[in-house]
Length: 203
Image 1 (spheres, rainbow, N blue to C red):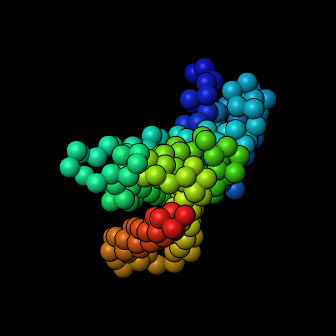
Image 2: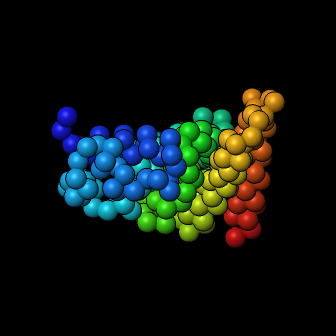
Image 3: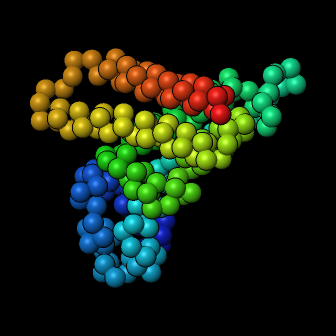
């Protein structure tokens, strides 16, 4: 089978899911693909680019904000505070569900944010949503980063707990706990959004 960027990313995601970021080296990836490590660099320049592309693959396209109905009370750019809130919550929920599937997924997204935040679809979508709600570009950028870091913090904690539980007895009611984790994350996201909107109204 020919070596392609698509095949490299699929294999890297599989390794990440099974073993975590610590075991996702270029050498390990090359071994898994049955090629020499140098062959990978025809498709990805370095591990940083690999992780940035993995972040994009993990997140996929984020939910977009839609315009208000004529009866709504829009801000200058046509999106109400309620719509901003619900859209960002939906974007945050989608990001959490996507990243949660992969060990150390939160770390991968964090690296991508540091390397090239424009490559992180969830961040870009959240920033656009805040801007559509009449928040300045600078504050929209900060708001999107704050929301996404809130999500990543919750996901990282969930992953750490799963590692601790891997060597002990499984939780008695993991389903109920997962629901509580999702609700806690959304609570935090809504608190951040409310603070952002309140702060923006005072500027």
